[in-house]
Every structure is written in C-alpha cells, then in structure tokens.
Image (cartoon, rainbow, N blue to C red; front, side):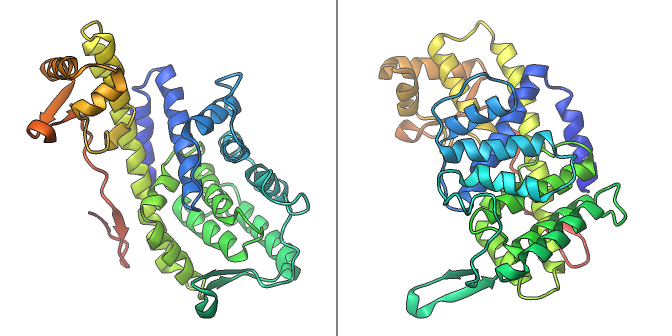
Length: 360
C-alpha cells in the first residue's frame, strides 16, 4: 500500500513545472520542520523556517534574521533531505543534535549523549502525584545501546543483510531510538527524522511525506502509543498505529500535489482577468493548501488582506465568484468564500490486527 501510494505521488509530481516542484519541496519540508517542533510544544516562525530552509537547499542566498531554533531545525531537515541515502552514524545524530539545540543547551551537552547518571524519566503531573511514563537506560549503557542501534539501522537498509520493508523499518527505528533516549533533549525530533530517513532509503528518494504534520494531528494518541510500546518488547500494536499514520501522511502529500496542479490550472485560466486586490486575496487563500482558509474567507478578511473598502470588497468578491475562482456559502454576516479547488479531505487511516486498512 505504501509503495503503491509512493508511485501515485511520483506520478502526480511529474505534472508540476520545475519551479512548482521546488516550491512543493520547500512547502513540505518546512511544514515538517514546523510540525515536528510543534509536537514538542515549540512554536516556530514559519517565514524564518522557510527562509532558512531555502538557504539550506541552495534555493536562496540569504535569509531573514531567523532565530537559532528556526535555523537549527531547517539545518537538520536540509541535511536529512540531502544525505538520506548515507548510512546512519553517531556523527550524523550528534550533528543533528548540535543544530537543533544550539544556543539552548550548555556546550558540554550539545552533540553528546547523556552523561548524567541520574535516571532519565518522562514524567507528568504535580510533584506529589508524579506519573512516570517512561524511564530510559542509564548513561552507563548508552554507548553500547547506541552502537547496537546504529548497526541495526544500517543492517536493515535495503542493501543490508537484514533488509526490512519501509514502514516496518521506520516504525521500529523510531520506537527503538526513543526507548534509548540518548540525548538530554531533542530525542523526539531526531527520532522522527530517523523514521523519515528509514523510509527514504527504502524508497530510494526523499519521502516528502507529511509524517510530522500527521502525527501532530494525533499527538495525544502518538504519545500514548509510544508509552504503551515502551512498557514491553511487544511492539506490534505500535507498528500498526505507525503504519496507519505513514499511509495517511503519504495521502496528505498526494492531496497537496493534486492541489498544486489544480491551483496552477485555475491561475492560468484567470490570467489577466483579476485586479491586483483580487489576485492578492486569491493567492493568500490558496496558500493554505488543501485544508483551505480556516473558516472560509469573509468580507472582513478580504478587507484586511487588500485594504479595500466594504463596497469594493463586496464587488471584488462577487467578481471572484462569477469568474469561478471562489464559491459562496452562507448569508449576510455568515457569508464565506472558498476556493473552487477541492481535493477532498484526507481521512484518518487505521490498520487492524489482521492488517486490513480502513479510513475515516
């Protein structure tokens, strides 16, 4: 199913012009950079991440004044994209850690596995009612554990002696790494990058799937699945859960590609028919992608985006509807406008114990 979906996504990509393909790569990877951070409760500046990533990928020569968090996650994602085929190494993991946590951890902790002998625990709740969700191996075992993990990862690559299917390898590598929890911080983001590297190596190209974005939509279930899998050596339930997420993420990416194709067709059809205000507003709405402008575009939104007066906004919006760019729903103050492009919603994907896939 995952390999079939990969072929569908590749086929759709071929319908994009070269510039649109580059735009798509930046869109997907910057979204992953933002959402993998948001899963950990860190909200980054979208424009700064996008600018930093464009520099990382050689698509721009300068960037906004991005903070260390934005530069760091962009550097990690850029390296993942460029060197997905390379074997995993301690140096790679430590480089990603230095990039992610630069300016936020002491220099002695950057790019280094844990050295504090105190127990590494993931806890929640007040001090008097602490709940321990997970306890990682002590620092004294990390060198051995991480050496075994790196060897396992490279052995299970497509050309390795114990090759595994893409989703299985990605799911196992993620839970394996998280169970070791080798760093004082950043393990979740690095673990998800490892999962993407595993899938990319099996596909022979960067996956460009919305893995972190999809996990963010299921964040509570994600942490619950990780916690349950860390309670023992049986990880079948985790692998089923992860497989559903990976397939759903791939379908979300395919929907994005299809949206870009339809967006290009729409803009070509409307070329020369819109005034400057209409074009600016339409591009702003389309920037939201397949999920659409949250709540729909209102006349008030239109005035904010374009600085139009109320009467001009009503006239412009009526023109966008008549030209087939937008559809109108609701009445009076509840009137909203939506792009005529529709790829349909991406439904949640689950895999049952028999391996059957269901949506919705």
